[in-house]
Image (cartoon, rainbow, N blue to C red):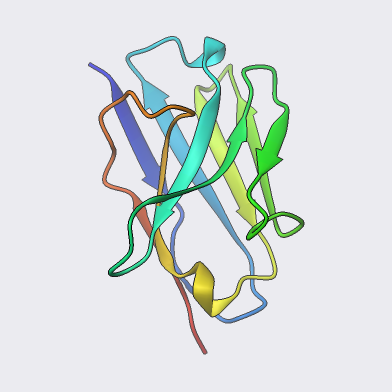
Length: 114
């Protein structure tokens, strides 16, 4: 059974940091280009960055220089290190393949507020 389980979200002050995790199971994680997405209240889900199967990342301009993606293929886990967080980063964060083709997980809530 294919499953994506995101975790690590929290309430954090502007300028703070968080590290999100995405535990994947039920598919050959190591051969897929993976990605992070987010959905803010009242807005559509948006793509924020991708990482190739061998670990090369690429980011949308809105997060470039602040967010860092990584992966551990031995643990079937995707990571998102988020630094210099802004209120506009508040959203539910999800992982999926670069072209989303897997069932979405429940996401993890990130709230940036003072």
